[in-house]
Length: 266
Length: 358
Image (cartoon, rainbow over the protein chains, first blue to last red):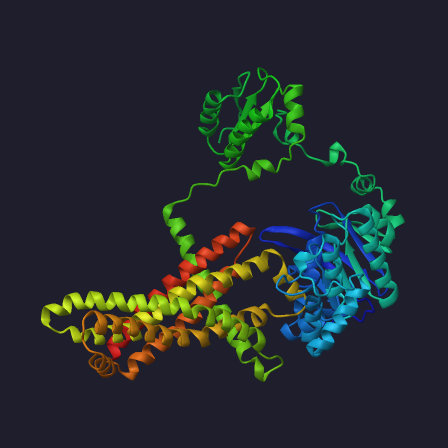
């Protein structure tokens, strides 16, 4: 099947995926444009992180397509997949820096491998990337010496090391104090403005959502229940959307309790 | 199938004794039966009582018996309202399986593991020939691994081999003394060390030092998502992690085995010359005459295979880690035990093969 021509850096079409017998994503579709931040919202366990893992091919799609620059990552062979992934950067929730390397070496690793630069030049470039995320001077530190916020920044620096067209951020501000979280939000906005990247950011932090969102999709139980601009999503009447933005528990009718399951109504 | 529900009154409090009786009543029913537990006498259900009751309900549901609650008090209702129904599935006991089923499952797991080790071998071999393709071997990492696997293991391998040589010589001396043939201790030690004991003691030491380290390192990287991070950067973990380690083992195992052979023969020499007064030149001459090139080569061939086994098993155990730090510990132990068993089994196969073909 030849994919239709598209200018979108990322197109996800009717994606179905899961682990073992469990289906985590059930028919998710979305697109992201260059220079746009798409925020993926949803409660814990709604499938947000699995969506990112599917986009980079860590979890195989059972159905549907993930097109990155018009190329389907699931249909790609090893060489094609390597080419596709060079255009994608993923910043993990816990940064996932290689603990045996310094921070600068972590950022330099993809540069050395894919751009075939000598180590000294790659390290210099890596330090520039680190400076861009506010970590000038932290290059020679080991990941274990960095604070949580610094590790997340270093993860972002590594994700943008190859200047990808598509940047994926998994909960970049989760677990951070409000000031550090705000700084990371500003960093994400600056990346969008300066690099014209398409950014997909998974988060459930309302502060970040209000700051960085151009468009949003909301997932619940692996399906998209709302999408559009932030105002459009906020206006969606679905009780799960309303409960999410008002930080409320779901209404009783939406939650099943043991009483519902066990009570005899014969 | 019984379509009428069976009613069973619950006591005022759920205690261990009353629970045992409820459990017997419920689980005694046939699959498909509905049992209604009447909670009219039950007061406010405390969390402990609820946990006890839910354990029985989960067990019954796993056995295909539908258990319902009737006449819930407000207190009991409050206790159960905030509980996610999913706990009934989580709390269900594992169904008992027939021993044949368990053996079959273990056999399938073992076949899967062999298949995965085979895949690892193929992928590693593919990466080893890549220097002629798009990417090269990470020589810097390989040399670093060689130092870890080889250089740092020299003292322990040499020390253990000297002790082994001494033990072989002392045991041999006891028997050979009866025939006045103590000089043949040189043959015994020389041939045993080069053909069998040298490669094997080296493999056991390397499995303990390096096999465990490989499993622990890769396992830790798996649980901290470092392996996933490498994959998303389009970097092959096989090329970065596996090839340098396996290559280092393939290169260093024969060298360590040579050191082990020399040290073991040295140990025998110490006993022969200084303990039994067999004479320096006589002992050396006897050793040289006894040893054939094929004895040494046999041991070296074995050592290369042992190195490959230790590397692949360590890597496989590392990549198989799921969960937390405890899983890394289990993988490490398992890597050492499996490697040693695999090396001893391979050694037996080699020895049988060389015996037949000699």
